[in-house]
Image (cartoon, rainbow, N blue to C red; front, side, top):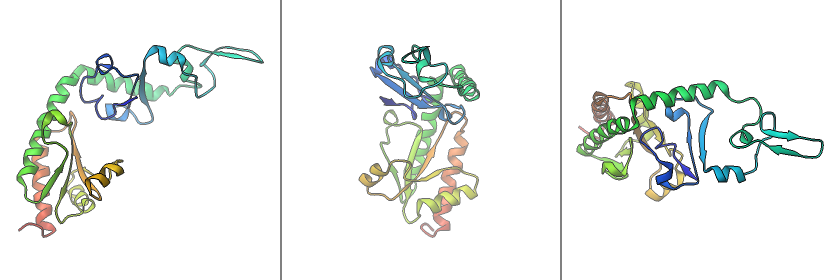
Length: 214
């Protein structure tokens, strides 16, 4: 099972080349609504798996003593389907296809390189993860010496800049890195190079505000 939530909406994927049995990603990270996602699986494995929910539309036949299931994917979609979210997810995925995932990836790498270079030029800023573009996506976690990530996040929020602070659903990784929490900036197709410059300027402003830089 491959968790592709952080990659499927950002770069082209080929399940045959990846040689995976299952691949899953969430809809809201692909410009779709919340509460829906995608599960791809090899046809022969989906046919072998039993259903985990039971209800209308997922059966082939029903008697008083037995029942048979419809073929996948219907046997996994019991009851009234999540129609509104499915339509929204389809619209999001079609929009991404029209733009092109390769173009989206190239744009994110442009922004990522700009922020890595900018953070590297600032004093007392630590970047977590590789600095080479071919080893990361458009997500950068960092810390600023002397400023708690939550304080930095609030300062940036007051300037109209949205970042995430905390463990980022990765407690074991934070423990391995020896950090309590970090600040995380992430980009997508709608972000601009000028926004990276504003973020860097406000991080410097935060250092002056909290007295860690003159």
